[in-house]
Picture 1 (cartoon, rainbow over the protein chains, first blue to last red):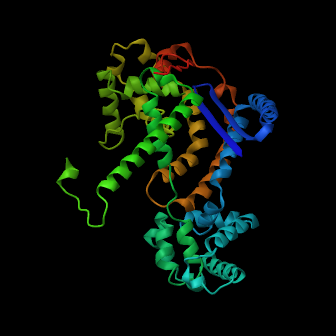
Picture 2: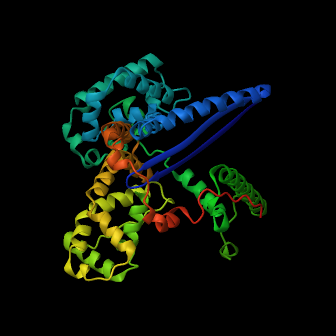
Picture 3: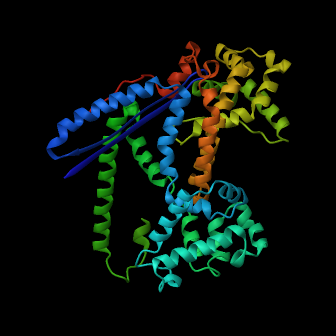
Length: 259
Length: 177
C-alpha cells in the first residue's frame, strides 16, 4: 500500500526594501517497511534543498519558484488551446514560437480526445493516423487562413477580437472541419477555475477564527481536512435521509420545502 | 511593501482620517474626469489582492502626490503615521520597487483574472505563462538590487504588521476545544 503525504506551505512577505519568499515544499512517498529510511533520506535531501534555496539571490528565488509552478500551467491542453486561439495577439505569438515540442503536445491531446469511445461522429470510421493527418491538414489551413479558413472576415469577428475562441470555433470550425473544430472547442473552453480552492478556503476560515487565527499550516491543513470530510459526510447523510423520505419521480416541490 | 501599502490605505484610502480622505478623493475626481477612484484594501483572503492593491496604488501615484502638495493638506494636523505615509509617497525608491515587483507579476495576474472569471480562457494561459517567465527574467536584476529589495522592514511599521499578520507572530495554538 502506498501512502502519499503531500504538504505544501508557502508564505509571501514583502516589504519596501525586502521581499522575502519562504517556501517549504515536501513530497514524501512512503512505501511499506522502507518508511523510516526513506524519511531520513528525504529529510537530508530537503535540508540540502533548503540550504541551496537560502543561498540563492532574490531574483533566483523568484525564478526558481515560478519555474516550479510553470510546468503545471504549460500542460498539453493549454498548449493546444494556445495553438488554436483566434485572438490576434495569441495567433502572432503562436506563429513566432511554435516548435516541435508544442506539436507533440497537441498531438497527445488529439489522441486523448479521440480515444474510444469517442463522441466525435465525424471521426467514427477513421484510424488514429488518419485522424492526426486530417487534424494537421486542417490546422495548416487554420494558421495560413486558407481552405476552410479562407474567409478572413471571420478572423475579424467580435468573438475573435475579444478572444472568445470556443464560441468562434463553434460557429466557424465545427461545420467545416472533421477534427480541428471538435478539438478546438474543447481545449479553448472554460478551465475548471479556482472554485474548489475557494471552497476549501471557506472551511479554513471557519477554523482559523477567534483565538485560533494564528494556527500554522500543518495544523490548519489537518483540521481543514477533518472539518471538510465531516461536512461532506453530514451532507451525504442528510441527502440520503431526504431521498428516502421523498423518493419517487412524482415528488413535487411544496410548501413544506419553504418552511 | 505590504505593510507600507497597508499604511497608505489606512491614512489615505480608508476614510479613518476624514480630512485626508476628502482631499484625496477630490484630487482623484479631478484626475479621472469626475470619477472618485480610491485605494484598494489589501488582504490575504483573496488570491493576489495585495498585488491588485499595489497596482491601484501605482495608478494613483500622481493623485497621491497632488494631494500631499496642496496647501490645505499641509495645514492639516497630521499624526506620526500620516507623516511616514507622506514620506513613502515622496520616496521615488518606494514607487520604483512597487513598479519592479508588479511588472514581474503582471502577466501572471492577467492569467489569474482569466482563471477567476466565468469566461473560457484556456487558450490564453500558455501565452501568459510564457510572458510571466520573460517578465521575471527581465526583472531579475531589479530583484537583486539591494537598493530596492535590500533592507528589512522599518521599526515604524509595527502597528501595520500587527494589523496584517496579527498580534502574535509564529505562535501556534493547538488547544483542543
